[in-house]
Amino acid sequence: MNLTKPFLKNPKHSGFTIVELLVVIVVIGILASITIVSYTGISKRATAAAMQSDLSNASKQLKVYQASHGSYPTTLVGNCPTVPVADNTLCLKPSLNNTFAYSSDGATFDLTETNTNGTYYNITDSTGPIATTSSPYIQTITAASCSSTRTKVQDARDGHTYWIQKLADNKCWMLTNLGYAGSGTNTYGDTKTLTNGTGGSTTYTVASYYVTPSTTNFTTEPTAPSTLNNGNGQYGYLYNWCAATGAQLSSSGCSSTITTPLPVTTASICPSGWRLPTSNGGEFTALNVAINGGLTNTNAGLISAPWLAQRGGVWNGDFNNQGDPGYYWSSTQFSATVAYDLSFGDTGVYPSNFGSKDNGFAVRCVAN
Figure 1: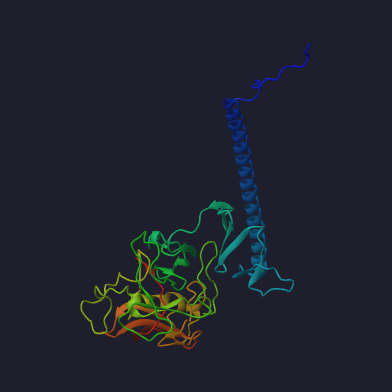
Figure 2 (figure 1 turned 180 degrees about the vertical axis):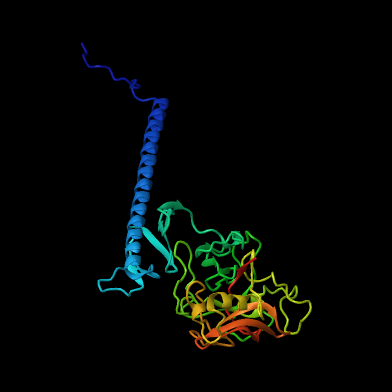
């Protein structure tokens, strides 16, 4: 008798069906999603709490400083050195993965903290920590909506950030030298075609910009632009008048001989809604009266807050006089080859100066 169990070729084994496996996978996915969402929410709340705590503590330190010194500090020191810092500075350290952007005119302050995840919180001398967004585009600011407090904005074309403010002359000014190199994002229809003329020769007819050495320092979010008030913070790019006016004297560019039609004063290299200021008794003269007392023997009121003028010198085949003096183009034409500008230095201010259009000067824009 053979007691050996017969071999079965196709035994039937029990196990999970495909439907059951799919159900398990879906359940695991749902649980994982719930876990991730919960963790993300907790992480965001922790980040927000840390930023609010940072700003509340910073505000207390700023107000203690103001009570001791009579004004808020003009700058912050981020590295917190062990040696004492200057009287006009204060050391404030944000928590991990956060950065501070600070501005002050001495009487008020504005402090924004930005996390690497794109979260923004802001506090001022008169408001508590509030969630905010990244800086608005300068193209969305008008003369009517411009704040009388220094405000950080972005140029939608390239993301560079600038200070703007409505000043005592009731005009909304850029407080930072323009640093636009042409092209970029054309959301507002204001991109321009420019040529980098650095290292080349002067020209009337090609819209050219010149990259100033060392102190160009253009910033993008979340870093704030310079608030240095010694005339040497951010020189910006220098532009010939062809570039400054947006190459709008003719359809093919600029000319050294065209006097008619006259330049369109609202067309310029400036962002949409902004333009070059007027001169020869125009907006540069009014500005000097409003912030420099109309003085022509000192530029102290120009280089200090709020306007923070930069003594960027000139390009005339090479860079010259960076640090003193400074020049800003206007939209006002003097002749076929010469245009008005604002020139200034330690010993003089000339709101109705004029220079050769092939020189490279700085640009500050004013809102329409």
